[in-house]
Image (tube, rainbow, N blue to C red; front, side):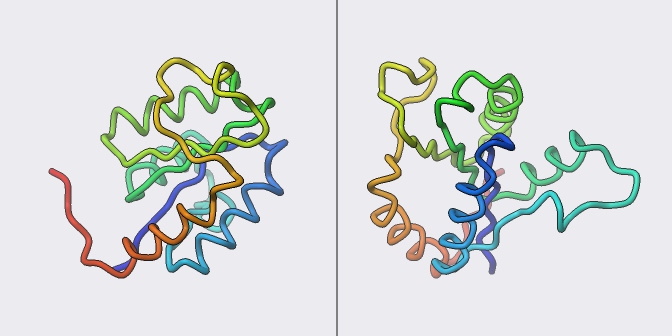
Length: 130
């Protein structure tokens, strides 16, 4: 079965999100894309909601532009409320700048370690959470 990942980010971090999506695909994951999943007449909120529900894991890209973004915070809250595996990816900011609800996280410099672990998860049978 495919392992589906949803990336939360701001538009300013699109290049970073695209690079991350490429790396995730190389590790064996399927990455949810708002552009490719668009249904005619569907709102962005509906697309995000559908993507979050379908995801096995949600990665939040936290940069100096996204860390205080209302959209990123809202989507992160939705991911937590859906009980998704949430992985914050911290890029170029210090731990003291992170919101208090962000605990364990991955630094961009350590992304290769995370991707190695992800590749193992994509090859193992998926567990369904009730």
